[in-house]
Image (tube, rainbow, N blue to C red):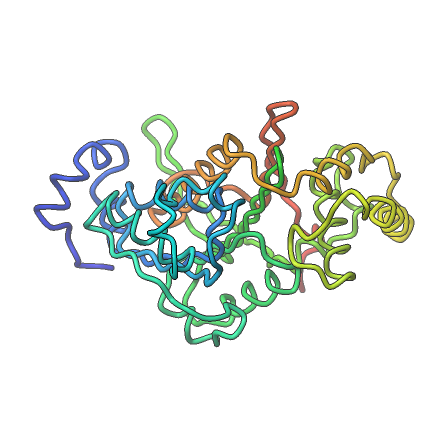
Length: 323
């Protein structure tokens, strides 16, 4: 990125943003390459935000055909059903995003994300995956970490009126400005596998209940061989049984995972568009921070529940220093 200046056209188009975060931050954005998997409602909100912000390129991966659910939560879907015929979700979203900002290169990559080798991810600065299985989250995060360069990794899930973001920036340096002073800071992030492996009994007592509930749902879907969201009210007794088993194994009081919360996650597997806008907005903001190197980044989980209207950041990391 060093030495590549903004073009005259970019400077004119992003003038207002440059006034907010500076020309260097905008230059970094304009030269960045983002990979996104899973064109759900939350992800489309995120894509809209970063395309308008002016990233260099955005690559979409999602070979699925259009469904009724996609039409209800994905505002990038064209209203004319004839346009949708024969095209994948990624292709339709690409066509719409190209109209938002023609200076951003939006492309589609076809194939199964898990089949892409480590070298494929070397082309990107940021990888964002949505609504993936537990195994896929671990796998893609691991492949990003195997690269010689740092690739920022994010997962995002939105179920009904609840949402979760996980962030792995590996070893991350950034500048934090307070008043007239700028401080250079460094954060060390755990991988997704490392984060969810932290014993529950070692976590602070007031950790978000959504953290525990999402782990139970992940474990259930993995054990049953289900895709994310392939769960219904008939599964609730089995989910509650699994919760009891996990809480006993983790020495955690079952009251930390309310049955009512699990019931909401089991029955409300579809996305709620207003929550998509909130989670997608937060995710876009965090990716812009990571690329620009400006601002205090999120470490390492973010949770939102529209029932209480609260957004909570949790640092789920192993407190034991590695020797």
